Amino acid sequence: MIDWISKAIILPEVHIAIGMAVVFGSYLLLPGPWKSEEGPSHLRYARFGVVAFAVLVCLKELLWDPVNEVNNPFFWQGIVDLGWYCVGIFTALGLIFARHQKL
Image 1 (cartoon, one colour):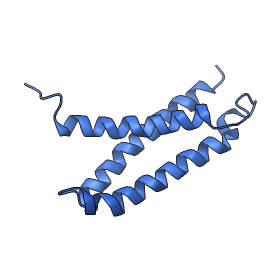
Image 2: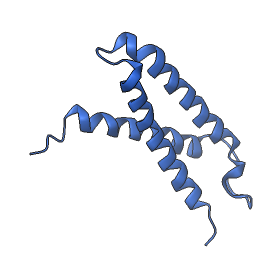
Image 3: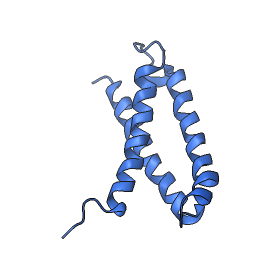
Image 4: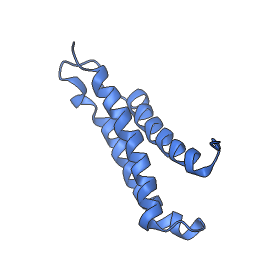
């Protein structure tokens, strides 16, 4: 039987959801000319929000987690957490990109 509330299942899902939430939040809440013929390349503010989030997550995983979380060194647990954040970020970016494609 699968323990659906185990840390091995919940924690990756949380990291993915946070990554997706930041991308969608940046896309929806930061100002910008959302209607454009150039496609998603005009989303300067949203890109800044995603890059700022990625930098903060890297610093958190590298500096804060190893000191303040038990048995959470940067190699390999921090790298795995960063990977799950990236899965959420790239999934959301892919969905936004697909939304702006002309059929």
